[in-house]
Image (cartoon, rainbow, N blue to C red; front, side, top):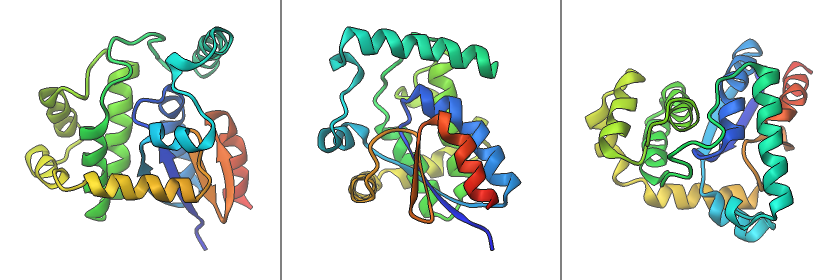
Length: 198
């Protein structure tokens, strides 16, 4: 029987960007059923002890940059270390991902989430710009106008998703939950795969 993965992410996270395609490949390999949860990590951090990047100590900020360089080189994934549009206001993009998910179009929701992350971290684009977000949706092969229209009512859903994430003890991105077992970070994908293979 295929395992189910709850996949929590921020559409601003470089770690979610580094994980996204790799996680998709792992999930496909093991025929896992995936539910994506694009949540507000500002609210998650507020109750879990996390801090937004500007509020972290200089030591932690410097180490984060070193780790991004290490993982970029190790994985061979293109990433802009200091993108112009980070952080962007991810609400509009998150609502689009949620709208697709709520329509039962999970693969499209995951595809759009990755495209938004790639726009910020690899393409120097701003998904908070309405024209850019519309272009991203079209590039993903979804009906941009219909998705944007459907997304207008998804703010409350995002708030509910965020409360759910907090209830599930999620505290960072990306975050994976499989059979009640929690995995935090793109550097835990090996363990995610082991769990799916078990």
